[in-house]
Length: 111
Image (cartoon, rainbow, N blue to C red):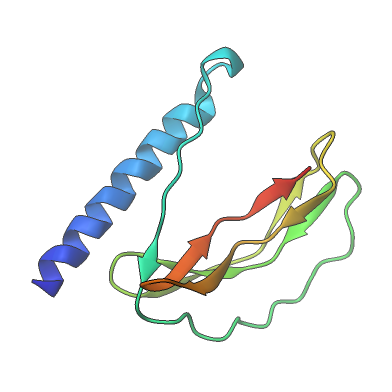
């Protein structure tokens, strides 16, 4: 049962990622917000140490984080996020404990 659930979870995440790529390339008038709620029972490992590059004008550094691929945690390295008008700061991706396990919160801009 657990293996089937993991495969279904992975297939669902792959489908949602494909939909997200479609939404990201849609014209602004057709853009939609797609939310994914990832909950797992296994806490993520401790964050890896990353050397933060020097500041880059017009960009915010998004540190690396542990993602869930349907079977295990995988490390996603840090990257630059282009600054957005009318947004105050970038909130990095992270995991937080919640009802039913650990909940993944994707990185996002805060107004």
